[in-house]
Length: 433
Image (cartoon, rainbow, N blue to C red):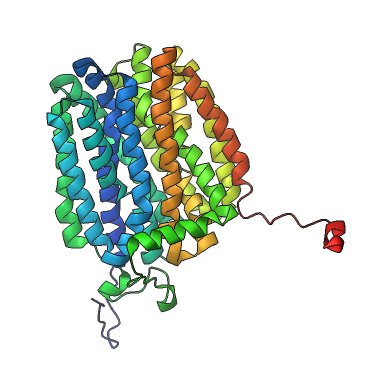
């Protein structure tokens, strides 16, 4: 409801814009989803030891999870436009909690693929990064980059909160209590979303933060969500900027949650590093990524986003080349990697969202960024499964880390081409035409 003020009063009460409440609820939801997605890193070794499943087999389930997490994004954005953000979030959290809880009773590899891959992957995909992009696009006309940076950083904060705790629970009580605890976290967020989340500023009689009526985004009645999502993909495939952003984000996924998020703990275990200590490395990355991604959001409001992406991918590539040396070296080398890589982990998201909005407009940023995130998760799935195969065949992860580092350097060059004007035809060719 719009706050009514007495024009004769000299002390009208100024309340915080409701956009900040919506952003806070979104942050907590993404935080819980991040806790769910962080679990495979600490479950891989216990599942391998209890059931005798190979890392390639377990990595297959994680790959399916990552693919569905990405592919659900654009459809979830279209569903949010049709049914509302609040309803979509509630369904996502309920499905995720049920899928995670059911894994405590699995005994076969196909059950792992079905539950963790299909059910949890689809559930978390409905509250993927596209949720943050949709909320920012609807509720904020000012400080979009900063808010997107904070929402993106919730992934890092989720790891900070959950990974060391999960590793400790697995070490003391086994992996089943750990997954049941994760399911409870997802379930607890449901009433918070039901009570406080709103779909649009107009629902509470407001305009977007820092904007006017002209900045309001309303896509209700947009038709069939699946058709809208597929139409957006068709438009994207005709755009060079979309292909470049999707390509860089494919490499982003292959060098972050698909590789490091899934395989760093097992890789550390191969070097004799305990799981709790390895989870501590990931948590440290989460701490520094919170600051790095928030700063990235602030910078994306002020600097050339293409150059920001080029720097981020270049530095990440160098850190991945250094990782095998750090794991085999002294403890200090591992902490240097954790800090350096952590500052850059998902700092790529705010400038990628802004470049997507520049190319396709605020009213379509949710669904278009959803397809860019789908490319991210396809890269993550390829890296999750590929690194598991490399480890099974070669006995270590060195080849996987170095390949990912080289791809990051390629992504840096691709980022500089986003938004660049196409080359003009030569004068002779124009004359001939």
